[in-house]
Image (cartoon, rainbow, N blue to C red; front, side, top):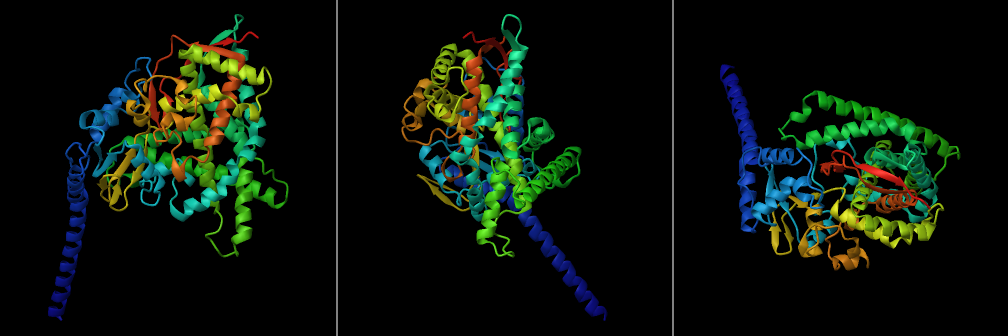
Length: 524
């Protein structure tokens, strides 16, 4: 009996030792062996970067560089990369375009070549989006985060929402939101027909109001709480992204972690109630299908009716799926347009000749009348200006992808396990692609369209590129054209002496200290 007991204990001890050794080997491989192997392979391919430092990599330097860059405004210049994308800029300057940085034990390679960028963005399954912290995903996932069949299904179901014919029907709501903002500004004018404002919060509220009306058939006031909660969550998510990632830290019930989960529950409860009400109305034949939620639910219901058999869970979207897409509508829909409009106003304040050319075009096409769909599509100078703003101030400064398996990319081979950065802002500011005036505002470069301006290369991708190009691109540009046309019809504007130029990546490219502008009533 004792002998059997001793044998049992020995086996348990051996098993525990084996498990400990396996665990220790995995930790050693994750923390040291794999990173050093990847570093060796990258250097053999001609990439340069700092030597790997255990666990933290370049994270401490990245945070230090960013903090220094954002500590004060910059000169009034459009060469924003050193401030807004400080560590990538520093790395490229130090190690060259073929460089990498360390995000903890994961190397991230910078890809500049337009042909290689094209390959990465075209080959979705080989270059998926990297896994992010689940707490960060609470901000917004949906279509932007899905891969494979789920992405294909969601893209197909959401496509009708952004159909051009549908966008035409939404134009009156664009007008209402823009008109409300213009009326507020007119009410603020002094007796001499001018006033100073921070345009940034107004433009944020404008884009939010458009999304509230168009996505959910309610006003900004009704949707205000969700927008406020999302903005708070975005700040918390950014703090999380910028922190040095310690394994297991996300499971600790810290104050910010608890708050992010609380906000997520709150937003989901509001959206769930909204969706349930709309579904009941849809089934009763009472619901409008002219807003984004109505179109999405109608598209989803049609899919289930045509391809579902009651038990097939892979057909259509679940309630959770619809909620996630609604969160994405709310967040991405207002972020992209508001940052495009704010930098457009800043640039047109600095370049009054282009502001005047745009106003003359708008008045020639619309006069003092309400802008219409056909007219907005004929605005050549306004389109040139918006493209140049998107080139110099892209809403997102870079796109990241993950290498699932060893991949040949042009004349290099990327090993499985590395991340890839497609540095949108750096490519948009690169003189090799855009000429000696690459860092200067010159809408004329787009006078013959994007294809001519880029010589057919993938060197302009403010909304992404390829199969995953932003589904809301036309929505955002149409809204921006409407808003800019109405602003130009009513006001001229210039930068206030209080304006501090400080582009900063806060999920998207925000003006860190606002956009202080002096408005003048246009005399007709």
